[in-house]
Image (tube, rainbow, N blue to C red):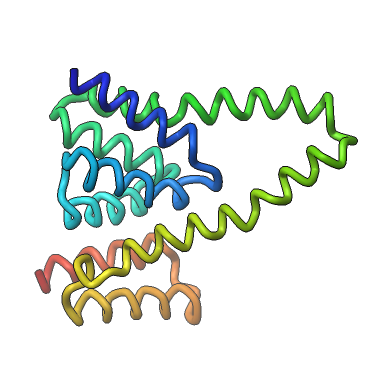
Length: 174
């Protein structure tokens, strides 16, 4: 039964999310932490951190990790990953067909342009969820964030080096 719940939950998340993985985060958090209570807020934050460090889209990485956390099996990971990816595949296939048919239409172009501000709002909501006091409870976390940001933006340090250094410092501190 849990596999059907996982499939349905992540299929709906994939179906109603525009803007990629970061836009999915607020919906994923609402479903798995608030509605189903499969994991707690701190675990969700840890999943996001791990999903950002691993290769691939953050929404799919999160679904994979949550599927495994909920079921404790490979099949849970596969179910959640497939479910969150399937709507995107169907939507992109449909849009490709529509685009080739209606690419000259002003209405179609207007619809695509209207989605841009909505996507920005969804991504902002995901960022607001991750920066709540419940998720960053200590000064050390903020200092690690600031150091990683400065290293990447000002000193152009390789992101892989930043991730490894932050992991090592986190291991030492915590």
